Image (cartoon, rainbow, N blue to C red):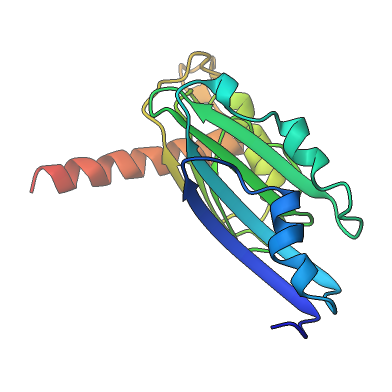
Length: 191
């Protein structure tokens, strides 16, 4: 492994203490790969934290990547008070994976032209503007799954003259997908 020129890492780590950051990657991986020219990664760390104040700030994590000069590094930190969990997602950009898991309302935007499958997860509701951002960020999306039990606060539909609701194509696609999921769920629970 010491002679690798390129290395792609996908890692999900459940810990009780710290998030993985640039210092961890440098110390435990990069320093051991002296010929490494290309390092692509997608890392999600989960820690159990009683309070949001126990988590490091996004800027603190981002600062640990100051010596990563070849590619931009994107960092996103979320705290979920119901589960008392903190999630830190870091990846090299441009994002080259075909999937992007557990996108939250804290999604940092960007263009993800390789991604075909995404999953959305949050304790807070996904609003209309969020789905517009998702549609812009993932132009080649084929599979969408949503895990959210909180209803939207701001419904974005208008009544037309003939009493039909006018939706943009994004809303129509998502609404149809959710209706299909709801129907599938009802059918499954009745059997």
